[in-house]
Length: 280
Image: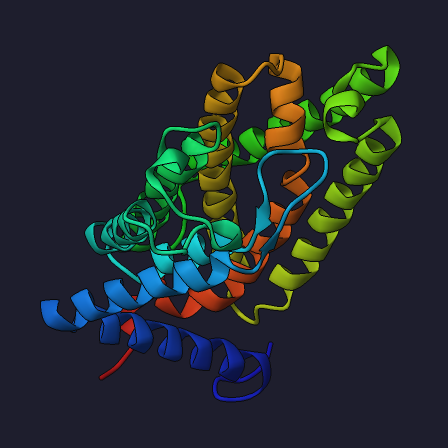
C-alpha cells in the first residue's frame, strides 16, 4: 500500500480536497452570485443548443443540449438550475433564436418536440437534487435500480432495432432510415458504453463517485426520452415503436457519451464523500 502523501494515496487525497473545496465555494455564494450563475447557465444552454444539426430519420435534431443540461444541473441547486432552463425556454418562446438550429417561437412548446423541451426542467432538477445530497455515493438499492433502468433501456433499444429489421417497417419511407442504419446505431451504443467506461475509469480516486453520477445523469436522460417520445407519439402519425426509434433509439448512443463527458466536468461540484478529509 502506498504511504500517505505519496503515489496513489496522494492523488486520491488531493482530489478529495479539491472536490470538497470547489463544492464549498459554490455553497457559500450568495443569492446574487447564484442568480448570475443561473442566467449565465441559461446562456450556456442557448449556446450548446446551437451545436446541432438535423437528422434525416427523425424530426428531433441532434444537439449538445443534453450535455449542457447535465452540467447546469450539477453546478447549481435545484431551484437555480430549473430557473436556468425556464429562462432558456422563455427566451425562445418570446422570439430569441436560442432553440436548436437557431429556431424560436411558442409553437415549439406545443409541437411534437415539446416533450423534450419541458423534459429539460426535469433533467436539471433531478441532477441538481442528487448533487446536493450530503454524500456523493448512492445507496446500493438505487444503484441497482438505475443500472437495471439503463440495461432495460439498452435492451429495449436493441429490441426495437431487431423488430424493425425483421418486419421491414415503413419507417424508412417516412424518415429515410432503414434497418442497416439502425444496426449501426446499435453498434454505436455499445461503443458509447465502452468509451464511457474508459472515461470514468480515468477519474483518479473518484471512480465510484463518477460511476454513480453517470448513472444518475443517464437516468435523468431516460426520463427526458420518456417525455419526448410520449409527446412525439401523441402528436405525430408515428406508431409507438416508430416514435421510440426516432425519438430515443437514435439518440441513446450519443447521450451515453454526453453523460460521460458531463461527469468529467461535474465531479468537482460533488460534495466530498469524506467531508472530514477536507480542511479549510
